[in-house]
Length: 262
Image 1 (spheres, rainbow, N blue to C red):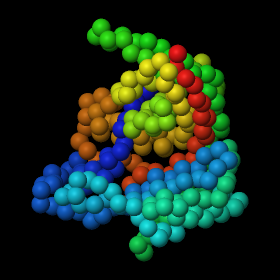
Image 2 (cartoon, rainbow, N blue to C red):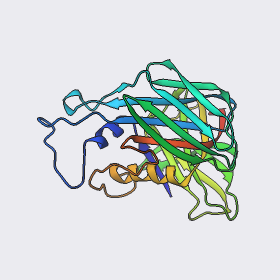
Image 3 (tube, helix red, strand yellow):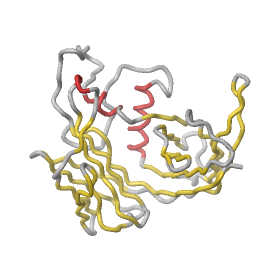
Image 4 (tube, rainbow, N blue to C red):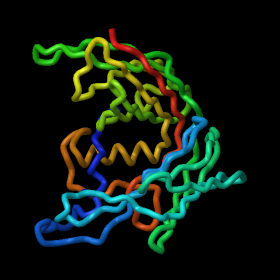
């Protein structure tokens, strides 16, 4: 199952929309909602957590950075990481590498409220290689990136592909699961919209093995936006965050590859 989604700006829209009531966006304002985008990866680096807050409808669904939060991640039976504010709304740890099979507990305290989540990092799945294929739709031929990897046997795995072209990360990203190809060798084409890939472009892929709950979170967004089929009535996707926050806490593996298109 492959889906591509554009999540920028989407979380704030979800904060104010329900499948059970129609809201007059010209007159009705809602309380701000905390948005948390938190990740722990298996890369040896400063881990990063983004905190923001939605603003009312009459301010164009924007989010503003959340300042002066207390942010910690504790490994069950292991160390506690304290995240410091590196720039407005961006919190970073010291250099740290997440461990496979380890469970991590997030705690964010801001404006008198505490938000928590728990996530267990899956095992590593690495890319075998990348390639470019040419696909023709309605008489137009375009280049697309293909990812090649071996899905592990007898494991439930889900994946997220993040694509950057010439140093610019695309707003769209892509998810996949092994529901129909468990244990198989996988060749997946990433059908990005814009920009069009050309000879000479530098491509970077961040290939992530994500947890099932994070896959379900992003898959729900594809259904709401209509990318996975007919659009459904907007509602907040399930999240592993507590206390009404939007967003997610993801512990995932990461395999980054760079190549140049010929």
